[in-house]
Image 1 (spheres, protein in one colour):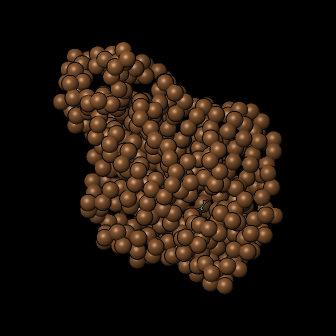
Image 2 (spheres, protein in one colour):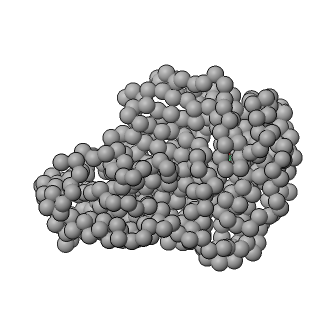
Image 3 (cartoon, protein in one colour):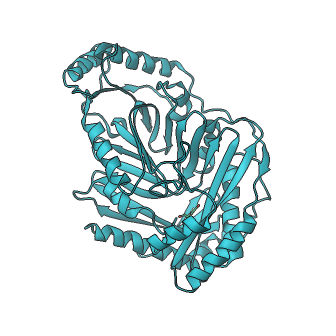
Length: 463
Ligand SMILES: C=C(O[C@@H]1C=C(C(=O)O)C=C[C@H]1O)C(=O)O
């Protein structure tokens, strides 16, 4: 039975599934639904705790999820391997989920930290990885929409109660008007200065690349914004749909008061039916008539080549046969244009998160050589990167996966929004131009979140 389209069918599926639920196993049921925008309906999915997740790749795949049925949080150098083990075990132990279209498959949701572990193990620090098998998963692709509910049986939860809860919630969601959250204008009371410190450390980093101690370093800045009112993270994300069509809009809300939001233009890794794709994205200009000059810029081409070569070499070392285009193309993301090379390979027998572990962090967001660059980032950047530039996404029950690089992002804690942006320093870079590039990235993000602008973004700014 592909899609239970009556309550009787669903109940039969639930009862059959319940007979196969092992100890600590979870019953996972899904039904198709009419209409429904995951972004608009996420606040209506009560998962029993404060975890919320949004993956908005519209017009491609959109997923809203809430509640933790199983979860894992840990730090350390084995985080990718342990997250893979958790994901495989959680998905293999699900009972009741029969064949369904790819959009409806059960998923384990993942948010990594940039580093293996935070510097300080404070409760609010971002751990090396968080992995969640959600209670509710609402997914949509094109006109197709499915709702999934997953819970352990026992303690009053039976196959019948689960089937009823799923059926009634789907009918209830269908009746709601599915308007995306309305944006309420939010002001900015305070913006922290970052420029002076950046100038100093960027000059230091440039000396390192010019002295050949590093080939590349992607130094980031963080701007703290104090907002005038308490914003709804989903309302902040909604305008990004309009402005950042080619990106994937993301929300990872670990607790009620703390959320990562962003619109990532960069794939670390996408796996569909055994085919892998990774994006080399490096080299930046403001969108506009002069953007095509990026293709001729020796400094940007060098920065880009380092990323393409590294991704290709990492995949080859893992035993894959990567294919790369001969020349980069231009990819527009909102008001920015980047050099872009999609790299693809057949995955073979590899597990998605083993490849992610080998790829992260690419020189698009860290530097080269990787180990030395990571150490320099820790000493030069005056903040914890947290989720910034780390992989975030999902793996599903058939082995498909999608992990985006959490750039063009920020974290919201109450009225405090922290935005982070970086730029690659290579021989030939100039501190002033890099400062302009991060200013532009921070400004574009604020504009796309509908926040009032600092100085106007100069459309013709040359980087
Ligand atoms: C590091 C960031 O972006 C990365 C760096 C780029 C560059 O240096 O040109 C371009 C795209 C991204 O891979 C960021 O936006 O924070």
